Amino acid sequence: MEEQKAPSLRFPEFEEEWNPIKLGNKTNKVGSGVTPRGGSNVYTDSGYLFIRSQNVNQNRLLLDDVAYIPEEIHKSMSSSVVYPKDILLNITGASIGRSCLVTEEIEEANVNQHVCIIRLKNTEVPKFYQIYLASRRGQKLVYQGQAGGGREGLNFSSIRSFKFKIPKEPEQQKIASFLSAVDKKIEQLTRKKELLEEYKKGVMQKLFPKPGEQYPEFRFKDENGEDFPDWEVKRLGEIADRITNKNTENKYSFVLTNSATQGIVSQTDYFDKDIANQNNLDGYYIVEQDDFVYNPRISVHAPVGPIKRNTLETGVMSPLYSVFRFSEDSIDYFESFFETTVWHKHMHSVANYGARHDRMNITVDDFMSLPIPFPNEKERDKITYFLNELNLKIHSSKKELGSMLVFKKGLLQQMFV
Figure (tube, rainbow, N blue to C red):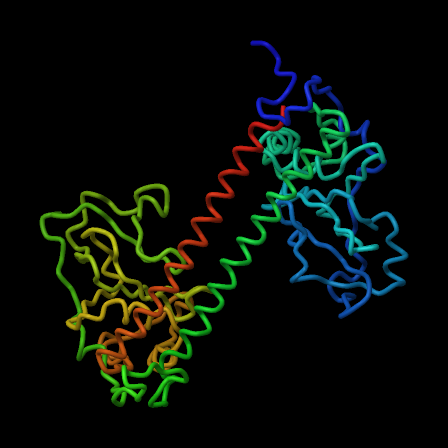
């Protein structure tokens, strides 16, 4: 097979072949930082920025969780000092291979031993090299360069020996500028999605009454500009039925699981394999579309366990879950309510914290006594419409971001050799 000497996608003004290089021949420095003596005990609230591997995201330096060190420690760690346009590459742990550039606003900073500093010669374009390292071809070099049977780390020798093809400086600059613009767009779309999600999270807490209060902080008006009737409080057992229908004779084989972050999903898709024994599902509960499921397992994302709505087809779930079905029509309203934290206080008040610290231990009666704030039907409809419109905007922003990420992935596959 003939060796590829130029990428399949390039700017029309460039026609020269790309030349093979070894990374070490293009650098003035390849080395890692160091953790100061005393570790986190010497961190301060201000001083010199101390960059750790969690700050190195792919193509972006994250500064929302940073540490600082005092000037005297900074001066004692001169080999770990980084400057604008240095490439930072994670060389250990789960984030191995992630890279970014030190940005212009950082005059001087230090990095720890898990981050490699790659300082290029002045004739090179650092952003081009960083983008190459983040591409599929660059990540292949990272994988092949890892040391040890467990492939758990990169050493400086292997990084210096990275071999790949590059164009001349003008084409490097053009590619770097173009892909930087793509990254900027991705960053903007990511922020747009995050802002919408933050807004939804905040506004939802104001659309439902807090425990012990009769009304929410924010209320809609009726068509005459007047308040709707008073809210009621109903127990879950008054407006929903607990479902305990067993999957006798293994009628259904579609096994579901309740994820705090993804909702109710196929167990096979979630775990990438079958967890349940397909021949022994007769003891599982049948879960129909629009049924709700409570998973008592607690996590950072679900501190009292998640309650999620099944939007998929009929399936089955482990009897460790609690399944219930509303007799009222306002399914979207109830789904939104369970996305808030308003109901968490009740769960904490009735939970029996035993030996299992990873799950809530709650009796059926206590669970079905969960108080649900219940407004007039027309006010419920207004809340639901508002949140559904917000969900559409969030979905649209996610779709737009996903399309841009796919677009960039295609570019990275075609713009490098």
